[in-house]
Image (cartoon, rainbow, N blue to C red; front, top):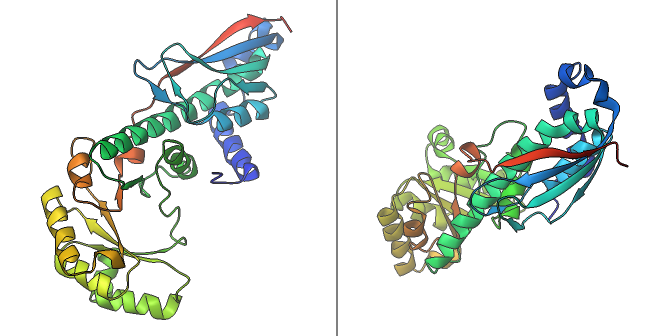
Length: 291
């Protein structure tokens, strides 16, 4: 699934390179060997298996720098420590110019993809088919890459931007007086072409949101027991099939199995992107002046 266009990606990655390079690489540009042809490899270094994500971005980064890069595996592949994932050819100075930016994205995106797959496995082991998705808790400038990494890891796309769909949160409810008022006003002004999701903090508002026609209702900061009780309540009332239920807030690896057992349709996890543990890769020049 292509989350963004290659032209837009190239522009963003060019800006990332500019941020890192500035007016030039003082160290490499001062060496006599800077213009030698060279071959380099990117190698996985994490002790645990890693889900690779960011190869397309790394190849574009090296292309912008005037190098040719070739992936040895596909995004989404599982790799072990010391496995080669990418080969690069070009001038030594150009390879080193793109090194850190490429590695930074590979490390971040692979960390997100790896954690996403782990969460999905945990949820499936609990007997749940719930989707795992990220949130908008991303670092500015990195969202499209973070969201793509979640998809590569097997997760689902949530809204990318505020203009993707309507998502009623507690502040919207506060300024509009009630959940019912918010949903009614949005349905009147947006029509049926815009999906409406409503965040709720108690079972009463959950029932109201379903009856008012919300397409998705998010249980916000419910603990696992409260989430199960709320979903059981709407199931007994015959309301469960009228909407999709999302759980969000406070979800961690340690408790996601308990949330999955509550039988939601989706679990959104903020830490996937705001507190990602990066995977580990390194770049090594292995030949020089040999092609």
